[in-house]
Image (cartoon, rainbow, N blue to C red; front, side, top):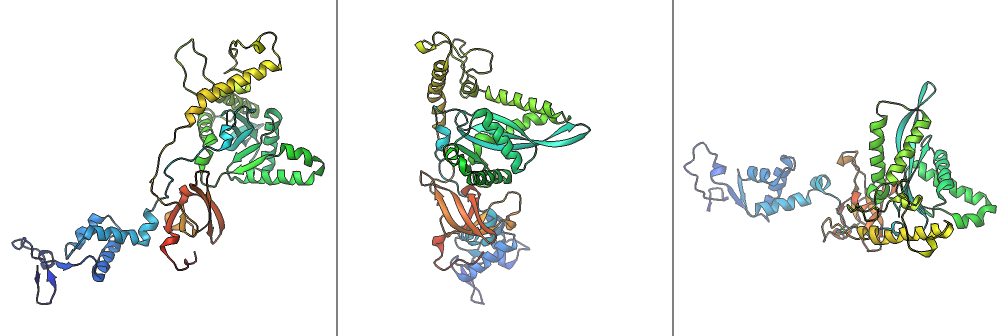
Length: 416
């Protein structure tokens, strides 16, 4: 290195013989990466080249300057850059999947005791000379994975309540209902609560038959995985059938019931290739006592199964199916899938965050401050309340990007 006539420390290189090369490239100025002027230069080039990759920025800086520890200093500049933080940050996922809710594991209870519900459609039907829209209401037993499909006239709360009443008339009253935050489900829940409040004479019965309605956070279809995959598969199957035709309503209703029966005939576990082995357990075993109506459930040696069929026979068959459920299906739910960074910091109260909205560009995503967290049984935070200018929004952590942690600053956070 040498100092020029202006007192600038310059690097003596080995390319003096190169022709048509600028003086700054031949003798770049030497700067410490920790100096203020070097940080301003790096920040300028970082912004000038549109927050590009480090190699591009390094290549341009080295045309004029030799900055020590350039790559690591550029990483720090990009890490502190607000634009990069907004446009490149991703939600931090927990290191492992959470425990299944107890509604997925309630054995030895009637099917649809714990139920998830979702809508799919619309589907076009022909009524006279006009075409109208209809929707499918899919009820899923969270324990046995059985499905029940009702045809709904619209997405209104009244239509939802009518579909729910038809479902209860055929399958019994569920104890717990899970759904997303669709307006029709929210409205149905409010109206059912009003009915329980108005009819004082039914209060005692309502206390026994009350449905606990739980909503998954908006934007978290993974929390409704028990029915979201079924909705997608049924929609795909029906789309191929209804793509070029608009059937009568009774034909569509029949088609939905056929789809319901096919889904309820699917095995819950692997199919054994040995013909002598018992058939695989299906949701239909819990609904009708056999897989698809083609054969009986099988022969059992229990004394209660001998002689004419009665209610004890049905009860023993149900116990048999539940024992198979515990022995064959439940172990498949045990493994966990590790994902995310095992040492990542969970979102905490006071963090300034972005709420991910995949339908909008990043700069239109709402910002806010985490007001409350909801740790699960394993103390992992997967749902938070975010206070924004439009109100408090409940979102899963998979849709949250932390911009500024609560520990990163001791001064009050700016208003968002």
